[in-house]
Length: 289
Image (cartoon, rainbow, N blue to C red; front, side, top):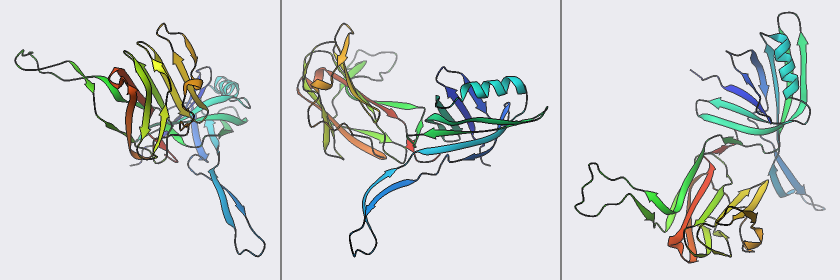
């Protein structure tokens, strides 16, 4: 038996509408959630049969939701119209048997509401400029640093044991369980002096490199997100500054995690053992869920 998805619309101020069979809002038709269009650029020379494809890009995702308000008609109609104003930003969430997925959206067409004394019908449209579904759940993988280690209880003092140890693996595998690439956030934290730390992606043969001497307590947060490609550098006292000027000119700001296994390597010119590094990404990114 198929699990009927539950949908949520969450406004920028945190207010939320739940669309489900056990709520006051029912969805009777939903279009545009899963399909994706490929925008194709092409050219044709004189006398050429057919065309030459010069570029492709996945287009935005328009969603149209049609449904009914069953109870508390006045209050629920007011809430629907208050949250879904033209151009308002929100999050469209879909809860399925495979997990919780979301799209960041704009209200393209505010709700049309019609009906009578006992039932109201509505329709509105959303626009997802980034069309891929992302999991609400994120995973953080340690690339280097002190990691917790299991030890038996009661503790025996015979032999060697430890509560934590430095992760010394040369390569680390990070898995993307979705069917398309996902961006990520890399966090580098110095426990003592580190010189010019670098993340190497074995699949793309590209790197992210910070050309800086990091001292104890300093931290760099590097994002490859499409709308937020940044480096924020934090001093030991917590003050922050734009760290973009510390980044190597050949840094791959478009580095992503491909579907499946991604083999990464953490290095530094000096002091790698003093570096704690983690990579945080959505558990999965998918074209349709």
